[in-house]
Image (tube, rainbow, N blue to C red; front, side, top):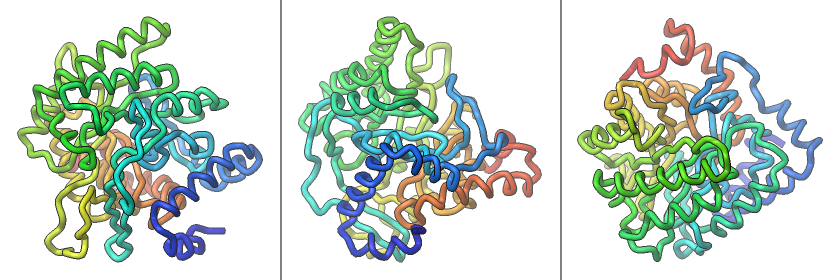
Amino acid sequence: MSYGLLRPLLFTLDPERAHTLSIAALEALGRMPQSMAYLTKHYSVTDPRLAQDFWGLHFPNPVGLAAGYDKDARAAAALPALGFGFIEIGTVTPRPQPGNPRPRVFRYPAQQAVINRMGFPGEGAAAVARRLAALPGHPVPIGINLGKNKDTPLDQAQDDYVTALELLFHYGDYLCINVSSPNTPGLRLLQGEEALRGLLSAVAAANQRLAVQHQRPPLPLLLKLAPDLDNDDLNAIGGLALGTEPLVDGFVATNTTVERPVSQPGLSESGGLSGAPLLEQSNAVIAQLYRATQGQVPIIGVGGILSAADAYAKIRAGASLLQVYSGLIFRGPELVREILEALPGLWLKDGYPDLAHARGSAA
């Protein structure tokens, strides 16, 4: 059954209930190798022009799944069958927590937007580690997105990130530090330059220590940023990825926004706004980060991708890789295949021989 036929039924359900059902379905699918092989054949796009290598990892295509969908790694075995070039698990906190009170997810179909105030609900790092350890393999890179527990004071936040990293280090391909969710009180204060340096230094030291302990290279360390930062903030944060001893290896831009478009007063719930209204704001942050890092630091672009044209706009802003989530709610997994089939034609139409030459051309 196509998603277009299934969506009206899903939209009769509470958004979080629909999400829970989709995770359960994918978790079951992960135990059905023949069904996964069928879906892989249907959704995957094999085109060497889409493949890239960053941080010592091979990405068969640039479209990944953003953090927030598979918080507890329940669907990690099945998700690559939907055509993703990589997936990001989480946000994972060191200890289990329930998140914020329900209702906490709101769909706006007319605006192709979502507002959430989830607050990092999840089973905690130990449960995620057990599931990742049981995976039969990693057909695509798996990133692990880390956050702090709600009741951890800000001055102890680095302990939460290090504790979660210690539990999950052996099972991820890259690490993403989330200091940009608007739904954990005070979390975004960690984006200040001084606080961020302290946090990233502590995580980097733990990363190096664990690399020696497990006899493998340190995990690439990425930082997920809010779309509500100004250019001065972005320039300062971009500098953390430069120099002889950079504190981060890349960026994920962006998380959800606390701003609301004046032209769309109906988006009134509190929480983080994602989907189509976030596209231009996210692209502006990507372009500023691209300029701040002289195009030398990979950026994963996320926010408002609902078409191949949206994905290409992110690449032209400076993104090396892409992530989708809210777009899947409105378009389904066909969105991934649509983007992958169209991207080469879009950059060739503009006269670029490959994705690398298109990257940053609008920045």
